[in-house]
Image 1 (tube, rainbow, N blue to C red):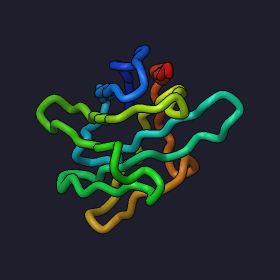
Image 2 (image 1 turned 30 degrees about the vertical axis):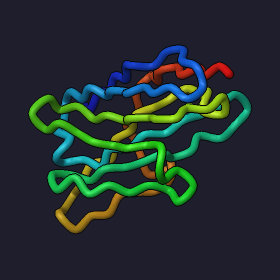
Image 3 (image 1 turned 180 degrees about the vertical axis):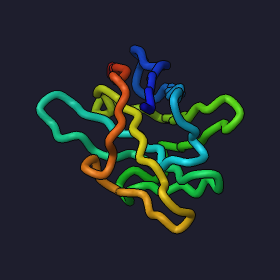
Length: 128
C-alpha cells in the first residue's frame, strides 16, 4: 500500500515561492506516475504536473506551464513541486497522487480519475 505525505505548504505573499514535498512509502517513485493536484474552495481538483517513473519525464497542462516545476529524488523517494510567483488564485489544498506503472510503456493519467493513491494534502494560502 502506497502512502503519501505532503508538506511544505503555508501562507505566503503574492509574488513569493514555495516548494512542496511529497514523501512516499510502500512503493518507489521510480515505479509510479507521480502527480500534483490542487483543489480550491468550491473548485474541482485540477492537475498541476506529473512526472513518470525512473526516467523522470514531466508533463504540465498548458495552463500550468511556467510557474510550476515538478521534480523527484529517487534516493529520498520524494517528489517536489516548486511554485514561483504565487498569486492569490493559487490558494488551495495541494495534493500528491500516485499511479503504479505496470510496464515501461505504460502512460500516466492526466486527470484525477487515473490516480488511486492520494495524500492528505497541504494548504497553500497566498495573500495579496
